Image 1 (cartoon, helix red, strand yellow):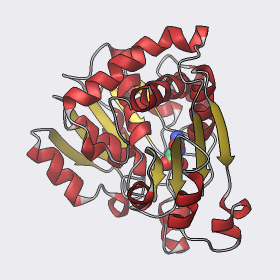
Image 2 (cartoon, protein in one colour):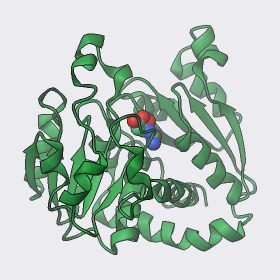
Image 3 (cartoon, protein in one colour):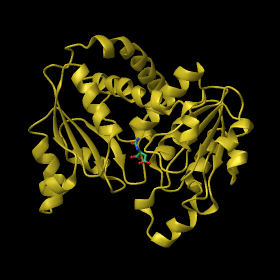
Length: 304
Ligand code: NCD
């Protein structure tokens, strides 16, 4: 087996491992274009109990570029878990007999960890509830390093839904390994979990919290903005109250540094105006391609 066993949480990775993953991803840039047969004996199962466009398709594209094969489902309803109530444990015990690696996205916090406990083959967390999305965080770190040439020394704004957004949880934790300044920008009711802020401060990260878009976009090298996670609000009225509270529009462009880049895990709703797409700040569609590169690195480090 490869250098990595599983990928369940960003908490399991130290700086050395993260840097090694990012270095391996850099090597995948040419492999992605040429394609290889390195994983031609391997099968990847994708078990997606929640909607996805980029994460699932980039995992599949990554595996195909490495010569491997792919099977799975993209919707819980078509599986026995969704349609008939089969347990996650039984689903995993079945799929491990069909494939060499499992990529799972599930609406419950802790689901990927549970899947790994029942699995005899490696498991990758492709999003567990509002808790974690480690491969997205790694592709975000890779994007920052590729676009800005470094991570240490940068000022980064994490914006939008910091309470329910799993990508910002994993990215925030991943950034703790670097010498960065973090601005947490969110409406009051969607602030970052105090435990993550504490972890950042303990790691020596200079953290400030702001509430306005104007403050969020000023004096930073990277703006990382996110969708308000409508489906995770326990009360629809709470969502209605905040849904339009944090929107970056072309009016905010003058406040940004000339070389500030804007990233977004996507999908984008109203929080990021499409007028920004044609400006040099907009890097979110380039970030999408980095998802393929980074996931190739992860698959290779686990399976090769
Ligand atoms: C994110 C997710 O699923 O958490 N999407 C993604 O994987 N790129 C972000 C979101 O849904 O808002």
